[in-house]
Image (cartoon, rainbow, N blue to C red):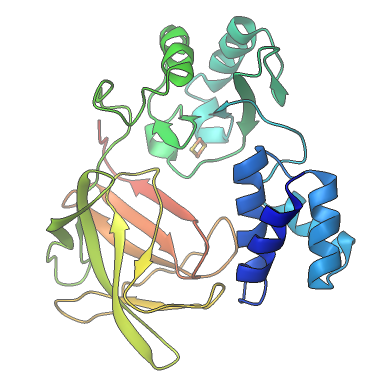
Length: 283
Ligand code: FES
């Protein structure tokens, strides 16, 4: 174990609010999972109990306590995907990879998992290949998905086949476009909104490619802080009455594709919770 690397991450992040999650994320990035020795070191250095650290590591489904393969495939088995044939897709993955959900292929290439909802129900069945969302997956696409995942093709120019889908965001109050064509994130125009919290205010930028989720704030925001998001044109709060599926904080919502539905994002800094609620079909 690279003790120096872990001590460095702890030193740079653990004093920040919500820093434990960042520490665990960075450890997982390096090892593909959270090794027990690393968790013990985090407990020792931060003074937090090992039980609390395990509590966080097992609460978030993004963390794994078992080594993962080089690539990650995850099929949604939530109700909306299930009624569109997700179980048959899972069976096909099991057969083609020759492993059960939760296992890694013997060549260590792919870890396959199932999950209960990925927040894009209207576009199901959904499969995630590494960090890319694949919409409307069918049994016939499974072989190609495995191949592309091994070759890391999703997200590259080679595979721009509509699997990951860009959205266009509008203010639900004044209908003004929230897209900023001059500043791109992940190769697509960014969504630009305003935020405010505890006397701080500024802009926040989000990628418009669904399935990616990095919020960039003009000012540094402590993780776990709840912010309010505003339309930069009419200054109305981006309202929502529902709560984040990941952490329970309030969602903020934007209208997408001029009426197709809503794109909801979590108002807690550091949380990647987001969801699409569609009226029509996007793809
Ligand atoms: S049920 Fe599959 S994304 Fe929600």
